[in-house]
Image (cartoon, rainbow, N blue to C red; front, top):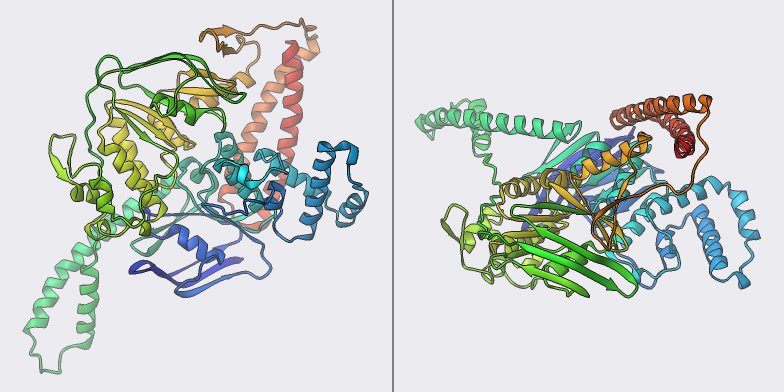
Length: 628
């Protein structure tokens, strides 16, 4: 069943043609990712499809009666609205009642003496059969961490605003969901919840994302925009890479063949008398078709990163008993660490626990409350911040680079001009003389990254570097960082990026506690699962924030031992949980490729039942494991 039809769509800005004559459709249950280089028009295409922008030409139509919801890349709110007003902004009767009910409950909690009468609202909820819907809405808000409904939007951080926007998009029970970079600014745990929610939901999805694990898990098709054309690939990200490489090889071979044929045809055309009317018309037409095919440019311009870094001495950076507090919020508590050469550290933890503050303290942008930082004489920081650098929008791109240097040294000892370097970073000569205000969000972030790398740092700190960068740029950046000779520190919600580049993690656990974990993000998640699934192991080790050492937690209450029957039940539960997890994974995988409505509905019902069984058995397992 067709849900979306796009016909002959075209859009340009100033003299820049983003896309022309795009035609495609999406059926019910399809979950499609849109990919392409920065500036090719992905976000613009989503806005046009969602009706937020008008195309120059073409038609967009949704199946009648569909509920369509969009999550923009940079959500816009009325700053004076409360969270509840922002989340429940759609005029849907059930949602209006749920909003009023939730606000009344919130008011009763804050001011119990003057609590409003919620009896009429309860009756209205009964009338509309809205209790299941209310439960679903509360679950979404809870999983996204949207709790303080009376808080003003202008008091929220970027990550909190993104979660509110995501809640707003999901609670309307959409049939068709449009998502532009849904994982930007989200905690890793929220991303994993969203990934599971979208993978198993009976939704049609069109999204732009650079998160390759997320893309692999949620989507069953990828659409690529390349030089204004659309190419469709069934399957996941790995299949996309393989099929894209095959297509490019075929294109190159086809163009070579056309050019050889063109030489012969051109010779034939020149040998025919101009005034003679007996030329075979079919051959003349074929000549022009061949000429068009032979003139196609199949050379792929790829990002080049080969800037050199300064050599490091023996001392890199030593932190001794560093503490930092904002008001009553403790972000660093007596932290000590000595960095070694070529160290590669990932930083993980929920929003608000001090990750960005930690980076600011290291780079000297903020002073610690106590403790000491001893930076080596040869250490040279390069700090790519999460916030987009504010360039003068009226300045030309080349002038932004020349502010740092006009001639730059490369890793092989050679030198290039600012213009040549920009060309390597996919800013061709014509674009270099455009003003910055005309760049896309991803292009501005690429320019920001270039300015950081131009400083030739040997201690590179990247705070959410994957936001807004396209997949092709990320692959080249990862290749460069793998060969980087200095220290690397990364804060990222992109699990693929973290897994590929980090050797160990600083896990921010709150209240200033930082745990050093020997492995990447996937290792951390696997260990968390294994600690849950295996009983009678060593007590989990925790950081002592004052001593900076590892101490074992020991039980303080003696539990009654398991009976023989309980022991057998306990052992059986482990096997049952493993089997249910395997069934759950199998169903989720099948749902990511299934497109039929009835099959998806049956699979969703089976998945709900398995989740209920899992929850019951895990609770019983926990009860018995405490006593075991």
